[in-house]
Image (cartoon, rainbow, N blue to C red; front, side):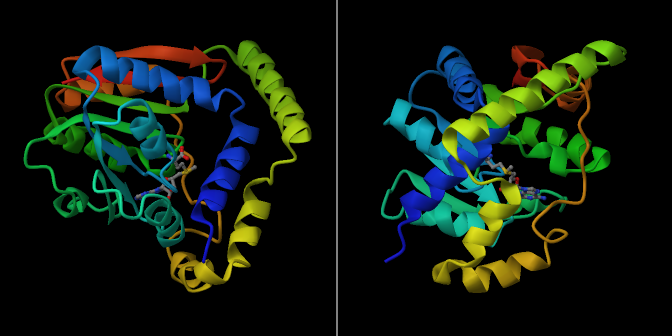
Length: 251
Ligand SMILES: C[S@@+](CC[C@H](N)C(=O)[O-])C[C@H]1O[C@@H](n2cnc3c(N)ncnc32)[C@H](O)[C@@H]1O
């Protein structure tokens, strides 16, 4: 029997070694969800990976329901394994680069909250712009969208260099303290897991190797503008740490 919880936990350690304050940013999103839509939300975990956000949503809001969507069969297998037999959760395979991706997602009532982290910089600018208009249709009126991702400083090259250097130092300290695998080592370990071997081959065609092709990281102001144009009534930065941030928008 595969220990799916082990794989989710090792993923979390790997992600935390790049984002030492990852729990803080995820908690900031859940604080915003509770404040805007309450403690029993219908949630879409967008680009869910192995369902780290889903797990935290259900731990904090036991009456929540979650749909997770991702394109990666390996990470979806871990997500499904962790949440097997939990009637509150379902997972959907879909590629956010495809204009009709939302058709695969059950959303008759609209979602109270769409949450995503460290993922949308994998999309090119036209795809992300289109996705924001898609999300304005998926989130119900009064619902919330939150995105935690890299959001660089603009027009401040010396400050950017300073905060980026501090980030690298913190990442090195975090990795030394936890002994976490880095991104490539984590994928190498996953490839050696028999339950994931075939899915690793399937995954091979999706992205370039274990990496990803696009690195579109606009500043927070880009997100605010596109979300407002996409159909959200409010959008603002609700959490910030150096060159990362959480954007939230209310429909
Ligand atoms: C760094 S992981 C973050 C996963 C999770 N949100 C977390 O914080 O642990 C980025 C995720 O985005 C997903 N992703 C990237 N491009 C995608 C696309 N075009 N469609 C669906 N998911 C995508 C990847 O498969 C991966 O699961």
